[in-house]
Length: 303
Ligand SMILES: Nc1ncnc2c1ncn2[C@@H]1O[C@H](COP(=O)(O)OP(=O)(O)O)[C@@H](O)[C@H]1O
Ligand SMILES: [Mg+2]
Image 1 (cartoon, rainbow, N blue to C red):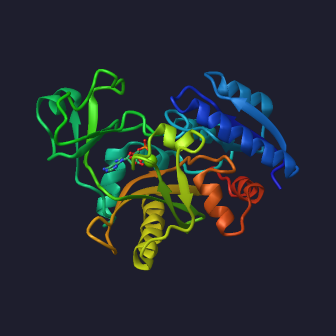
Image 2: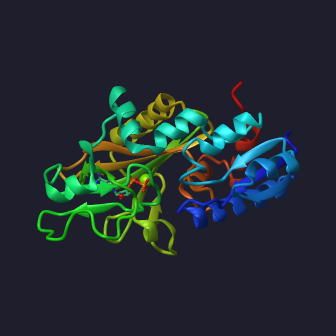
């Protein structure tokens, strides 16, 4: 058993609060499971902290920039420390949505029509027929995601956009919101996420009562099976390790079975006991402490 685990959390990304919640929950579960745990709120001194703490394994509970995009993974490899979740390449590719979508398309995984553009170009001329969605090429937690409806009069990318010059525009997919957890290459099940206004934004993700989860999703059996299969294929195509989570839109507005579109793969999904991946693990009789323990024992460091 890997006795001393450093749990990385917090960091400087926009998802810092979410990561602190994930990290503290995982640290607590590991302590209860008998591990010696050191919590590290990640800053620019991370390398020095790790050299001082000398953990056997690093549990990466970071989200977003630096923690989810390959940066911290690269540092951990330089330090020859085994770590949880995906490696450098899978993390970097999955985090940059335009690249991830290219990988999905190359593997015949359906995604909505999309194009990479700039703020100025999108505000000059619609890049796709409305309705479409604009989103930052690499963010999480629905930051910056906006639906551009046919009748909207304001510029598609507003003054509150602070995600750089590039914009990913994607055809708006009506219908339902599904997500699939993959553990060790195997899909654990499909969850449907119900929100009041059909938009899975930051508050719906994290506020009390912001969304309801249906596990297992009550959808056509064929679509359920395809969602599992597509998620396993995406996890493999990106080269993910440990646990990942694929987000889908399911357009059943013309009746069931409808069409699935993969939005993204999250290589560092939320890890509180009530998060989507732990919930799907529990559905497979893997409780939160057992899931976190498995992640630590599965940690690796490519050589
Ligand atoms: N093409 C789309 N059509 C409809 N809804 C979308 C689309 N893209 C994103 N959304 C909505 O925005 C949410 C966040 O988008 P996503 O691409 O998963 O980015 P994030 O990394 O922020 O989670 C989705 O869960 C969904 O509710
Ligand atoms: Mg998402």
